[in-house]
Amino acid sequence: MQRKIVPNVVTRKQVATVVVEDTAFQAAKLMADKHIAALVVVDGEGKIIGIVTERDMTQRIIAAGLDGKTTPVKNIMTENPDTLSPDDSAGDALELMQTRNYRHLPVTEDGKCIAVVSIRDLYASVKEALEEDIRETEAFVFGDRYGA
Image 1 (tube, rainbow, N blue to C red):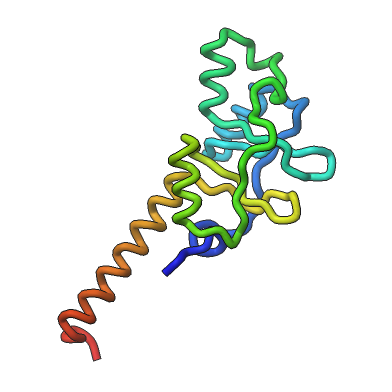
Image 2 (cartoon, one colour):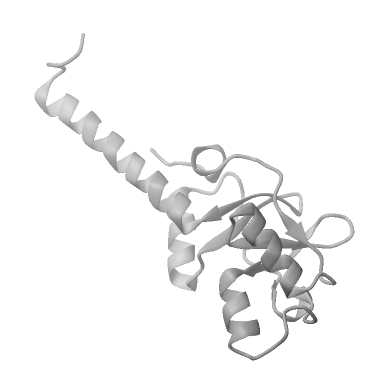
């Protein structure tokens, strides 16, 4: 079974966002408050223009010796990030994340972010699909000895 990003891996939801003028500190605080590792950066119309992650915080703020309270998100975000469509398959998303070394990808529809999928979400989905395949194979090979 080919699992689609939405709804098989993640569901549509209100995504935590920041704007380019917000500081890295504000973004980090929002991530900590929401227990998330990535934020979508949007323009005035709510369209995605970037993404900022925990990795950006460590590599582009802390390791660079910058002050997170004065550094704007626009200086550390990844502009025009790769995105997924709700109909993309989990397998394709996993391959993109592995080849590009991503841990989070925005899922967009009409330029607006409707979800963020993480590598952890994809691994859980793939694991569930494999377990389902094993159950179906066992039922085929051994017959339905345990059910009706």
